[in-house]
Length: 348
Image (cartoon, rainbow, N blue to C red; front, top):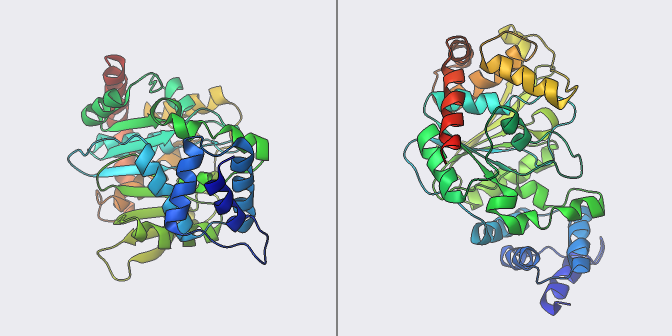
């Protein structure tokens, strides 16, 4: 038993009347002990469930991210605009993702996109980003970090694969199944950036209190530009079936955070998200869109692609963004970017 960790655990696990929040430094120490296996399995499980009940504070999340920065792998700084996508690691089970299409749309115009995650994992065991990319002929799982860096520099798109590039974080994934709930580490995954330079952080969320935490947390972490999205299943994918609630963070503006609510129907889109029926069919739908073929996922891809083109400063307004996203798909630029990505990964 680790006595130092025991004292930190006592602070957060003493119940609603006597528990105390950890400082940023204490949270960083506790997270490091968890990742490096200094705490016992019983202590780790107790910490996760205690924090789940108590709910983490902004300072605690900042400390957890500090430990991830200390121990996790990071891609080196590259030229140009970089966007980091933060989606839940346990994947999608109800709706077909358009995140890979959005990434390819942005990359086709020179924005470098970094994704991160692992295989299908608890508690949802949904369709993971890794699985989608493999279905599209791009397998990041066997690449070293230096190879991922090369792919990012050549093809403007890369994925940091947790089991290969951050095995310490991967080692605590089984606890999600054992405690039956997402621990606080599932929250920091949405705002963790495996990149050494400044990046535009794009993070999904489900519950409004989570976004409120992000608003206070990200400035503490010196994140200058970020976008939050109450997306489908907590992802960054904007819904068609309801108003898309997003937040625009920019430290150079006053106010530094603005609410942006977009209704798809106001721009002529159908109010219907595509239901995930099977992994195979989902990947087929994504591939059809990339090939420029109109299908049930088409409008969602354009809606999301256009929004993020506008948000990353590549289009002056949303309507222009939607038109640009459609043009990139129809004229084959997105398909060409996928083919380039396939070739670059293949040669590694």
